[in-house]
Amino acid sequence: MSAEATSRRDTATTASRMRLLRREFTTAPRPAPTQFVDDPRTAAPRSRTSPAHSPAPMDLGVLDHVIAAVTEVIEHTLAVAPDAGPAPTMPDEVYQWAATATSTAGPGEQQARDTIIYRQGLEHAIAMGEDTVIRRHPCPQCGTYGLLWQSAARRAVCVHTRCTTRDGGPTSWSLAQLARHHVAATNSSARRAT
Ligand SMILES: [Zn+2]
Image: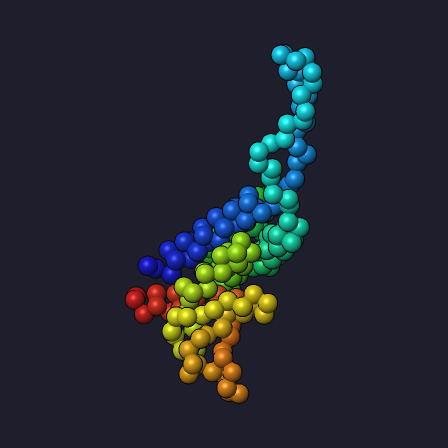
């Protein structure tokens, strides 16, 4: 796959995760509808009926996450392309807007944009509890698969016993590092292919 096609696919993936995140995790709580219906047989008011399924309460942490993500993309885009025009109001549309607005920017700037968008895609997946997305990445140091996500430290740890830091501990990677590695690897394999 060309670097451009991979970039398009990753942008679409991040956007759809953002859509899912907003739909599933930031649903505002609605008061349960209260109905008083006269039962025709008894003419006595029936008790309240509550819906079988109430929407999940709004997760303010997720809302903050969405706002921070959108702000980062808009600020980066406007720094590269000041005449990008107004950003879309829907958070999941901001990625395509950023890609279009910076499509003629230099390769370094496009790589930086792709890295932000890819990292946010990982962040959205993890915010939804899907930390298995980490396992699809080879370790940036040893190249083997087997990264484990440690949520407290927010780092991916390599389980390969010979893959250690200078002081002998296991290597670990931030999402930003994994994203940089993914985008750089995509771009360099595309360069080799041409
Ligand atoms: Zn490793």
